[in-house]
Image 1 (cartoon, rainbow, N blue to C red):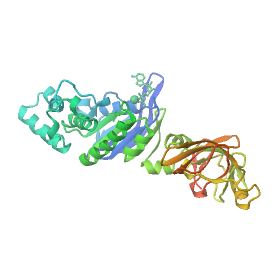
Image 2 (image 1 turned 90 degrees about the horizontal axis):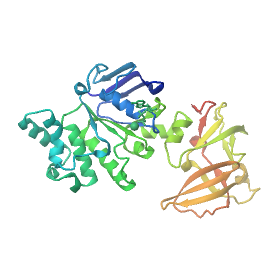
Image 3 (image 1 turned 180 degrees about the vertical axis):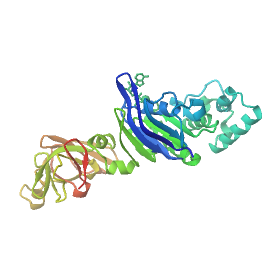
Image 4 (image 1 turned 45 degrees about the vertical axis):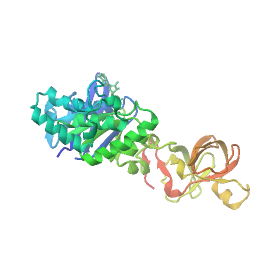
Length: 359
Ligand code: ADP
Ligand code: MG
């Protein structure tokens, strides 16, 4: 078992609370992702797991064993290095062998372990090549093989693909997800890219200034963000968050441009959140037309971004700007007047301190 547990772990650097009372459990074989903006404490958490830092308070357990005073070598957790750095002058095989040679393991044992890890990662046929002759995905497999050849309890990655261009990043993250599924080993992964976190992780922990704000499966956090902070971090375009007031039979926002008929709306809601894909946009036919009248006042189309499979429409609704994500390429022009609406069940409600409220 290689589950990794933090109990109320705090780590300070001088006055900076790098990790603030963090508690979580990474399950055996899980792809667990830490996601947050720069300086939110992601790398410090990895260093605490590796044993390169010691907590000021709290306890860390790996496979059920308390490790606060256990050296990095004895924790047997492997770091896959940033940007997948491989030694360019060595063959893939020598790169993978390196950690074992360094530890003066017997040659017969090295050969067996390299063969085992190469079989698991399907790289036996490319071991003779130098990194420069490998594709991005192959290099990633070799870098992971180098980390796994010691048979660690878990492996860690700190923003490993952030330096790649967008197309290669998409390709690499699919590869990474596949590798982790095949290996079935605990992986702790750090990223500051929301799309990457959503796409690869079994579960995500969201960080803000060293504090864990929410832990859950990507879809769970996306559908039920615990606060406006979390809501804004996941999703692109990001969730529209608007000041709201109680209206007849529900809530209103953006000076009556948006009316949500929701008897279940919580009384203490001060903001509503609307995902761009949940906003319906229709032409504003007739100011006195019954259906549009019920929907609220008209909004103006500010700008239209056709992106092929879908279109982002930015709307000027009262003083607010909001973004709607529509399928395909609808016939909507800048400056047109439209009616916007949202199913009550898709509305997120937030209270005074930004915390999510149940309907
Ligand atoms: P992230 O990886 O999310 O960017 P870090 O874990 O690197 O965040 O940093 C968290 C906080 O701790 C930041 O405020 C950073 O400045 C501070 N910090 C990290 N490492 C050190 C260090 N060695 N000395 C002093 N402050 C540090
Ligand atoms: Mg970092």
